[in-house]
Length: 124
Image (cartoon, rainbow, N blue to C red; front, side, top):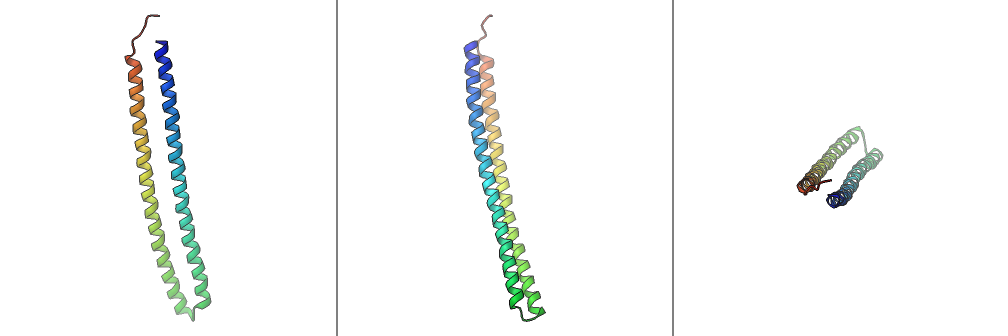
């Protein structure tokens, strides 16, 4: 029985370390992708702000300024919405990966515990 328990704890430790590594990699990938999304959003706002400043310097009247600002606002909204869609897709993909990792982990744990439960018990 002692050998079976030692084997069980060894396998459980290896499994835990492997799962922790996978979880860490998933967290890192998710963080990097979300950071990229934030950088893209900041880039959109910086571009719109720069173009807005240019418009203030080039506009030949209030009507042209208002039309230019309306166009920039529409473009900013469209680009932001597209970025939001990408972000939501990322969240869905990541959630599915977390779910699959949890499902696999539960399956492995059940198999390992079932193996220990079936191990022959020796009299003490």
